[in-house]
Amino acid sequence: IVGALVASFVLTKTAEAHIRKIVIEKKESPAFGGASFGAAGQYETLAGRAYGELDPNDPHNTIITDIKLAPRNKNGKVEYTVSFFLVKPIDLSKSSHLMWQDVPNRGGRVTISAAQRNDGDIGLSSGWQGESSGRTVPGNDNDWVIVPIAKNPDGSPISGLVIG
Image (cartoon, rainbow, N blue to C red; front, side, top):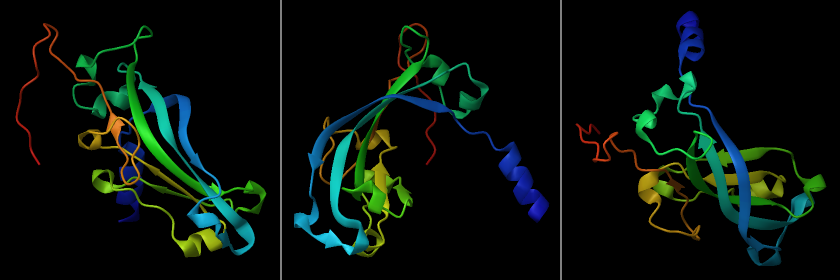
């Protein structure tokens, strides 16, 4: 069993992406009504967007359906935008240096609990589902990703069986 688990980790394909710009669109400092949490003290929240790109020719990215048909920027990369929400102590020297990364289902934002804030933990929620991208600005309660719409080489829509 252990050998099978190791093989699954070694042989599993993963996509590779790079963030090229981060924009903070909203900052609340102090957050949580100015409450203080344990030795970490007061917290602040940052909401914004991260702009990234993928190389459609990178073998790691072949796992992404139709990436070869997605529009590309001038560098030949496929661009995407993802929202994020960060909860952190105002004074990072008081943090636990532990960050919780939540990638919520259907974009429903998850933040760290008061107990985790009392420990000085940092919380990051980010989007990954395109169907949650109905908003153009990160909301108070959801995160999303915006990806390009792939088309056939002649510009026509891609059609096929959807399973799920």
